[in-house]
Length: 599
Image (cartoon, rainbow, N blue to C red):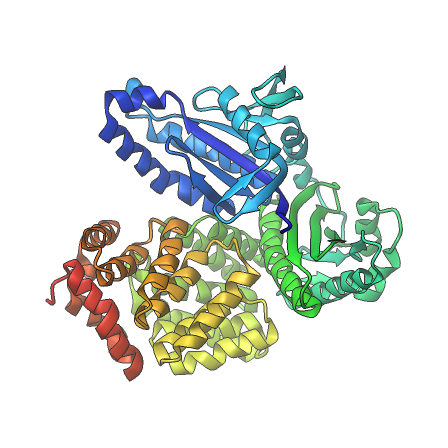
């Protein structure tokens, strides 16, 4: 059987002096380490689109598709640990040593192997407590893209690695305020729109002519999908294909086509596997902003082409918003503040980020009261904080929803075919528990933009509450396929887990709900759902612990105080009879068993 391999950025971390710490205070050290992992490490890795491959007792191994994300994550983890250790006695501090390497890895379900992993582990051992060591290939990839200094530790002979390894120590001081390279800040040539891109013909690196058609198909579909994004100018396929088989000078292409960004990619086939690589380049500076690689089984090439282009289009919409928000502008306009607001939402799913995004969107609206994009952005952010209001994001649900409904009405009157406007209308209706009315709004958004993962999730939730449970799973699976490292993926995992729970497939429910908890351990509902699932599987100790954690994260019992309080507020009455009956006999029955009182 052939092995699955991929290029990955590997982050290896362990606790300096772990044996001493455990010897002095075993239980205290274990609890402190667990707290750091849940409160800092897990969220940071998820924020930077990585995944924990495994925990190693005194540390962890993580992988990232982007080496820039891996180094940013390593630096922010060490800064975060320094802050968390500030009030702790020096002899009790937990300090990580981190190594980052870029290499080809062998992938198994719960582990990765290979020389690239071994080198990362050796770099970790060379790092000082609280420090980060990287290999030369990592330093070379990020030094012009991140404003960090590197100290050359020269070549090191390390255990079980035949060749010497060139090692660099990352210096955490001196990072710029925006956290991007100076190259990204170079002013754009006059005339290029803010969000403008050309998708160059993907290169066929195989000898198989069929892969040439496949590469062209990805180029064409991606051009079409990107053109659906709001405010996006995409150079036509016919013009882009005039650059086929020519030496690529991205700065010249940017000047000729008056675009800010260039996307290029390649397709290579090996046996039954196809590898698709792509990279986003700043046309003003030739700086590489982002790269992605997909390894897939050929199978149905048409389905594969559709999946790859869908995922790329979604990822690029995020990366372009990040890049534009980080680019300094002398005279910011309404679109500038909309992009900054989107970037704020991408930072984290927190009350502060939500408030900052709303402030920026409101400023955009004040600059241009007729801007449909500003109207939709304000309305969407107000509806979103109501939908996650159980965590305390919204101070006035009624006022937020009234303003959101008024703004989205204005936006749809001016732009009735705008996909995001229909999505936000669906969000407002969902926040009002009007599931049946929300469904066609989400469907209209998806008809215009099939890659709209947030609309897929919202539609799935409405289907769940309206009683179409199996459709809810299918829609979440589509979202996961399109954006497998999405910051909101815990909600998609959680929805699948909840459907399994409602249908009494408890083991499958626990599997998905644990994925949701690992992806977002600070969200109380992930723990509440697990409490019910573990209780129904007769693991009452774990169920009680999850219920207690849900209440702690909620800031007290409040909404989670009793079965009666969960049913309050109109949500329960709005469920379809089928969903209400299933919820009563599974989820609520599990919570009662976990220890939640009736009143």
